[in-house]
Image (cartoon, rainbow over all chains, first blue to last red; front, side, top):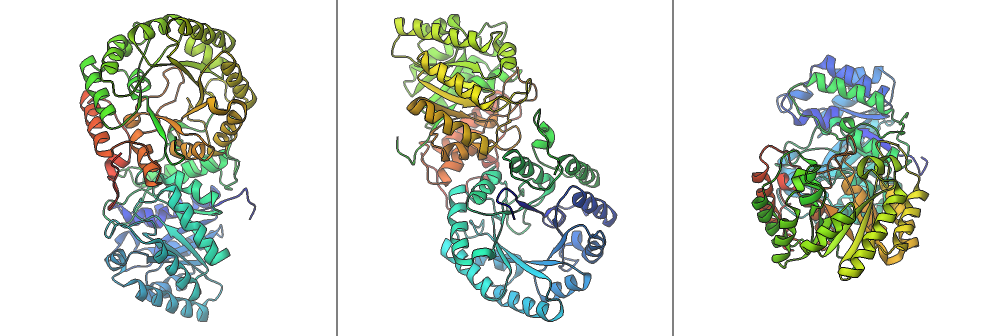
Length: 307
Length: 307
């Protein structure tokens, strides 16, 4: 990948939709995913393979994965918290799995009812299974609460990096860092990603930043400066983590695309088409607030984002 | 100034209040200014010396300057567009003058009805007058539309730097760059401030960023990395420029303070007291929206900003 190019992984259909009360109808998900791929997004986290009684918003994950794959438009990613979820996701045909592993013991227990060690063991089992049945599928982990936890407060940086090293050891392809709680600041983002690159080299993965305190884009900029080239973002900024009280607001895809493109860094995304996808999202969830300043302010005069 | 210290110049009482329709009563301005100084802000732009029929929100500028000075709490700054305004501001007792000079000819004509050359001449006259009657007063210019203009689009970087050099030549003490229209991106911010330092050395001044497209804090971070240590911000993000259509949203003081403090960079501001000032603002302008994410989300667990 060119140094002047970044990769935006759209997490709205999973992180966004699972965090709100409304359930988006499956047909609307299909339309939204199609529009997102058409806008140039190369990777979309389309759903989560968790029990439907826990997250009814994700009950149609199998259908959604199948539809997204049928579009043959980009990487179809799904979240799986355990082996059972991974089996279902692989059967549905995903290209890539993402597994939630928390750097905070308190958050890990609240989110997946497992200790951090148990989660690493779980990741190892998922990878073993995957290597047997579908070795072409890649596995990523975004280490959640990597920058702090609403339950336990500070999360020691050494523990975050040690978890990343353990995850690489069990075979995870990409290990990123997630600011689940919106606690991150640019200096911390630089310190942690720098260590992550030192320890993992090319297995260092995405920056998943939240805008809870308005620092989302500044943190993405800091990560970019430290060498990160993959960024999670959510259209309309929907999403957060339902098990981290007070957490809200993924980085807004629209604003992130504008920032990078304005800097001369290619995202491969067509802004007008991205706004068309936004209209589908807004129409499908009329009662939910959606965020983003660039869609409202418009692209500056004399400026063009063609993807 | 320590490298791990920044200086935040509060512009809400001028840039903020002049951009909204409501007129804050003079008594409320007094309370707000007192609370802002009490929170640790060392410099406040308290008003604008312009004809009251043009900006009725600023009609009490003389009283406000006198009151702010009587607090003996920090630098009292006022905006003056011309010699007449400068005379009134100096009579009222300001410590510092700021003069709006635009890098865009179209914006200059719309904002102050003068060409850029005429404005530089005006600045020279103000400085000559000031040097005669009150040589201790300092003069700053924040070059507006330095990153682009809603009227003319792109503003050539060479023209921005040439204006800065001309302003230094006529004796301006600090020359900063203002993203009046919210067009700036971090790469551009770095390029322009780098050139500004190369040309002006210690006379390079503040970064005045807007959050129109959500990039306000990212742009402040970029400016910080290029050596900028003074940042304009507005409590509650109120303000913008009434003559630049579509422009809105100064960088929010609260979020900017959180970003720097979280990075270990001292602002000298007590966050709790800053929130007390915010309450005064909100109560005085109940019908106006105010912004900022950190006030809503709260300071992260285990984190303290004591100023």
